[in-house]
Length: 366
Image (tube, rainbow, N blue to C red; front, side, top):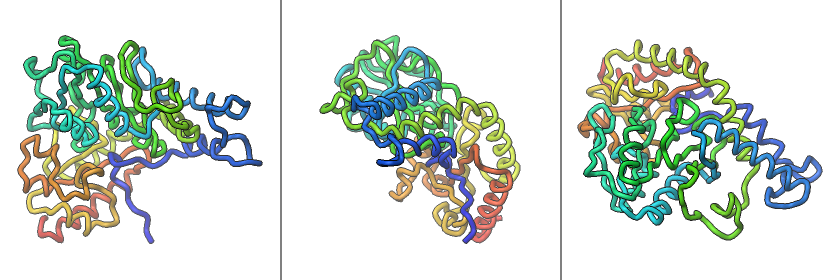
């Protein structure tokens, strides 16, 4: 069987060999080492495991603003739920968030009866409207949209939120380790598996001085904020992936830009969803009149790509991001999302795009 051509980096990224290697010691069983120990234990093995967790915490924090604390979670979804629901308890003045937030935030916003802030046809948030920003509440503004790749003006929303004594929550999952995280947010959610780390771990960064209630109680782990036994292996993998991202950021960006140029040259007949310049160029969301995206995935099955967010791809619903941008239902169903990164070769991308173009021709689209 020929290997899959993987062009779905927004859904998840391949595990970096360095991250895998960092995890292995902390998976050792009896007789093979001391890596299986509980980091809350006070014996030598437990202290070594706890030290590994703290090294990883520092590695993740190095990619985030100064003046805050990293709390490990099971992923960004948990981090966003924690920030919004516990944040709403601490800052009861109301909630607002962008209409193109990931479902992990958007469904929280809906449950909290939040004000939904609009975006333009390019997938960029409109300038903050003072009347829509809550007083003494929370504003959610993601950094890079997961479906169309647009980079949002987070700094503008930080200023608007702080002017009304509100907190700014930033979902930085798709930008973390790829672009600089702006100073200013009070809460930042990130995930390991989007930067070549393991699945099952993320983090919530909390600015110093921000009062947030614990997510879970019962063991006082994570400085009393999230009880439950911490996995040194997952933390070590996350930390190694973050350190590698910091080391390779410039070269990764240059590689992504080369792949973006190649893709744009190969798909001149396709229309771009989202702003061409104010976006992360490892995300390409395009549409073609006459194409059925779902059938395209079936006919180009040797290529891994998506119709939008992996979390909502099985629902059959049209992308809420594209609809918020004013894209018609027909055009939304004719749209696909392609993603690439560090381990994508130019040859792979070229072959994958040729397969997609061939599949489109089977639908009568030349």
